[in-house]
Length: 427
Image (cartoon, rainbow, N blue to C red; front, side, top):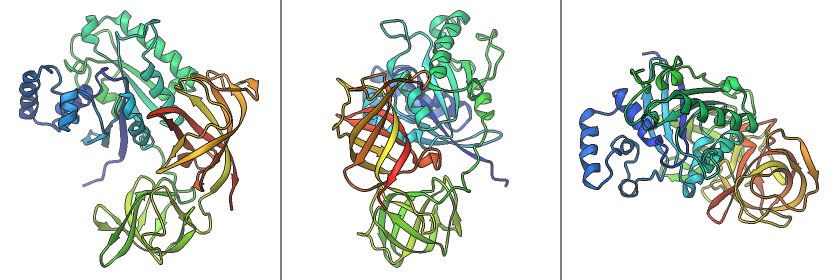
């Protein structure tokens, strides 16, 4: 059997815009979910007054989510098309779960943004979370986006309504810095199944692809194997007969059995004895591989989640301070010097102090609006200098993009997302 190329596909969008329903419909029509399951879900959903939720439940397997009608954690499903093998990630739209969205989107090769054709904010613009997810996708480096304008059935499949919503979205993507060739727009009705797998008669005016067709037209990004090895540690296990086994996903570079590696900021090194993926021994691990590996001479207490493994010849960069470009997604007041929120990057979470506001930028163009501003508020973009409260690994986005992105969280929400422009190393 020829192995199909693999892609991570994340579904994003505002709560209630029909993400889970669309994913469920897709998996159902692809035959990845049986008719009997949908029928059972439909009956159960009707019983608790949640009619029309049957497709959403394919992804929302957690009991709690069914009762709340919300997607809480990131659900992963497998899907094969004629061309690709996909891991489908249904990232929560709800604000409390944006943190998961960050970890979800950072692993995504492409995103499907699901937008309700009819829902607007009080000023007639797009919903705030739709904007937030677009900003995050950009900052987190999602390079290809399919925009599924959903719930066309609620506006009687009106082409004008579709074009209106599409125009708003095009403007938003342009502001954030996406190029038209990275984008693909299409109308769908996830619940009814129009233009998901089959065209249907209701959208005859649309001459573009179906959702599945668009998904199959995605490109597999080249694996960053030429970059230095970076493997952020997710967990550390102690396994009888093997020893200490760090687990994580290779972001860049290649790890081979026999390599001499170092963990930073822990500063411990050793030789890679074994690498395992899906309980099988493998000779080397490449970007995208989730692996467990054993390093001679490294104990369970020497390393922890958030440490990064690299080769001793090109060790991970430990930052004493760094400069970053950020977009403020939401903050109740304003961000000033001295503010110390938690920075989430790769698998690390570290409180960092903002030591200087260097400039305020136009979020549409990136041009400097003001030097040394007193504060940055919601909607602003800027360049800031940051000092971690404890050692942490981060890289310049120009050198190792996968390791140069972060989100800033405080008070249970994502305050900002950013990229690392410059680093003053600690070592």
